[in-house]
Length: 249
Image (cartoon, rainbow, N blue to C red):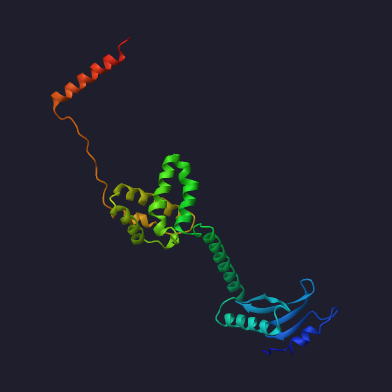
């Protein structure tokens, strides 16, 4: 198909208001629509993808000159040759740029990235955990995560965290002898991952794979009286104390 039908930029610059033409055709899908967007001329590229006739904008003239418009049209043709849809590719690029921009803004503000373990955990704390437990309990959970989870896995995408990575995080807590705390952090992380699954940010709960990976919490046995005679003496002592306590003055 013929291309480069417009002789040059001088042809475009010579167009005057009132020109009866609607477009200048440059060939193979590229053309310039005249007097659009408040009087500017707009580049368009028509193409067919999967049987559908589609159009994308390539910028306005003179900001986008003839040479640049042709380069953009060639890029679109290459995408079509590879089986891709130029419009879909452009949309995906814009979305990726928006995500990157938001991530930069969050980082500048000292906030965790979207979709990170910390971001999901803080959302779970605020919307679920705070509503189910006492304020003191919720605060203890938050502090544990802030001290022993967020520094290691907080910025990681929650959907990319696997069981060994979470276990390495918990091993640091074990190493200082805080076995019960390690178990509590594992349980809290498990609830965060389940929340992430429910919100579509991850597919698995790696904490569930660590069921027997941590050292068990040691049970503490308190002293008990096993001698029947001593037990009776304790009961008699308690009765006398109760009697004296409740005797009227």
